[in-house]
Every structure is written in C-alpha cells, then in structure tokens.
Amino acid sequence: MDEIKPPPRSRGIYLLPNLFTTAGLFAGFYAIIAAADGQFVNAAIAVFVAGLMDGIDGRVARLTGTSSAFGVQYDSLADLVSFGLAPALVMYHWSLSALKLDNAAMGRVGWAVAFLYAACAALRLARFNTQVGTVDKRWFVGLASPAAAGLMMSFVWAFADGSLGWNGDELRYVALAVTIVAALLMVSRIRFWSFKGSGEGGARGDRVPFVALFLVAVAIAVLFIDLPRVLFAVGVVYALSGPGYWLWQRSRRGEARA
Image 1 (cartoon, one colour):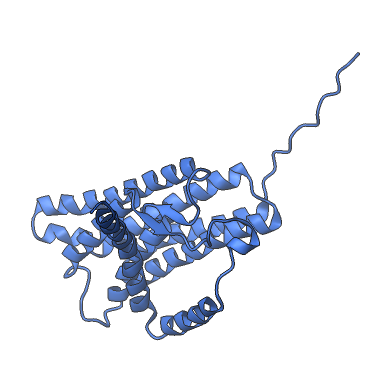
Image 2: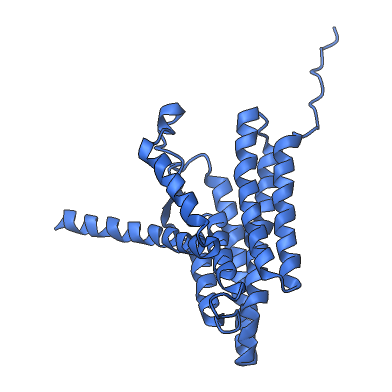
C-alpha cells in the first residue's frame, strides 16, 4: 500500500512584515551613503527611520500572524546594518576620522573604535537571538542596539546642524567617548527597562496607568520643541538608567548584608 506523502511545505515568505524590514534596511544603507557624502543630519534621521521600521515590522508580524523564522533572521541582519554598521560609519565620517589631525596613531584609533561599535552591535544581536526565549521580557540584557544607535545618531544630529557652534572635528574626543560607552553598554550584563509591560503576559501585563498616556503626550510636545537635542537628552538618560539601576541594586544588597 502506498503511503500518503504530506503536501510539500510552502517556500514563500510573508510580504508585509518583511516589507517594513526592507524599508529599515534601506534607511540604514542610505545613512551610510549620506554620511559618505557629508550629509550627516540626513544620515542621522535615516537611522531613526530605520528604528521606526524596526519597531513596526515585529508588531505587524504579531498582529497579522505572519511571524516566521525567516523574518526573525532577516530582521536581525537588517538590524546589523541599520544599528551596527550605519551608526559606526556615520560617527566615523562626521567626527572620529578627525582624530588623524592629532597624529597617525590617533587616526587608527578612530576607525578601530568605529569597528568596535559595529562588532559589539553584532555580538549584542547574536546574544539577543540566543536568549530571546529565556530572559525576562521586562528587561534588555545590555543596551539594545537600536537604543545605542539612537544615542549615537542623536549626538550627531544635535551638533551636525551647526546651531550649537561645534562641529565634528572639535567634538572628536567626545564622539570617541560616546562611541566607546555605547559599544561597551551593548555587550554588558547591565539590565535596561524594555518598556514591554510587567512580563506577566496577556492583556493585563501590558496595561499602563492613565497617567502614562498623559506623560506620552507631554513627551511628544517636548520633542518638537527641539527634536535633535531632546532626543540626545533622552538617549543619555536611558543609557545612564541601566548603570544607575545596577548601582542602586548593589547598594541595596550592601545594606541588606549590613
């Protein structure tokens, strides 16, 4: 008796979520091209657009039931370009390349630190992919690569428009420090709040107080007062929140032991 063979598995992919992922990848690629042409404000904005697309594609996949292993891997590769390579190269072209004005050795430090950031972003994404089903969803272990890219690009955007009177050449050592800190925070074990609710699951775990909606409206209003500078301030505060929470926990443990 002949066995009934199962129908062949479809090799197609879901279009809608991967369309947003492709848009984010394009924005990251455009940021690299714009930075090479000296259009640093446009490059920084493009990385933020990539972050918006990255936030949309996963939600669209969950809402439409079109999540797939292909989409997860494609999203990770796109994130490496948009939040790893693009911020590193934008920062290098805008400021880190000016380290060669000091001496040849510092010039090599500039591109080495840019590579360090890109490598740490790749390591952060790889670690996230392997731990996605085992960690508390309320927290990111290490600074998320989109947040690190936001810190980097808000710094560039805040000063590249020239309204504050400083340019990338003059801020090269500040840019060096920002890049190193963002890179190391990504691969650290420090926890950062993920804004994903209480982690209890279900609709109740995602509910927030009414005052949170009011604060969102206030935040949107403040953002449009001076968008690049406010984004940079938000990025700095969020980057400091992880080490601050870690220090607070250590002090509480010390008091408990005492």
